[in-house]
Image 1 (spheres, one colour):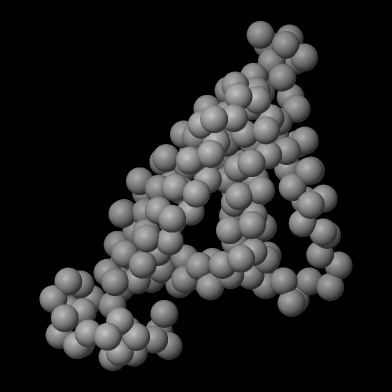
Image 2 (cartoon, rainbow, N blue to C red):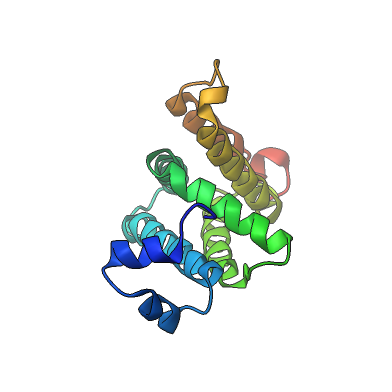
Amino acid sequence: MDEVTIEKVAEEAGVSKGAVFHYFDSKSELAVECLKSELRNYSSNIYSGLHEVENPEEKLRDMVDSTMEFFLENPKVTRFFVEIYDREVNGQGDFGPLVEFFREYKKYLEDVLRELEVSRPEVKTHLLIACLDGLAFQFFLEDEFESFPDVESLKDEIVMTFGETRLEEKGEG
């Protein structure tokens, strides 16, 4: 994000620098809006077809597939997210607007895990998100990993790990 100037953004958009600042108070605000836009596109793509899927395991697999494919196809989004997160941690930005996306994503995953009747879905949802976020970061750094497992094996393992522990098998249901 630091490498891109407002002048470059304005030039690419075909508007004046003043027009950019008319809509955004800062470069950081523009960056957050761009990330939100990408996440909205991601959300609309993954949620639109999933409401028609009845099998909860298929829903989980579709979510895992969509999430991993999104980060593989859009590595710059991961980098962008890390930069915005870093700015927020250092008190230079407002991460609040992205909380809405996280809550929607978390709720959907938790609902799917509840449909699967896994034990402690509220806990496993956070672990699943952490797993997917961690993999997104690893994909971003993929050149550094010589023995990175194939993506389909990772997807299968995630679905098995988070989707197979049913309440009745644990004697909790």
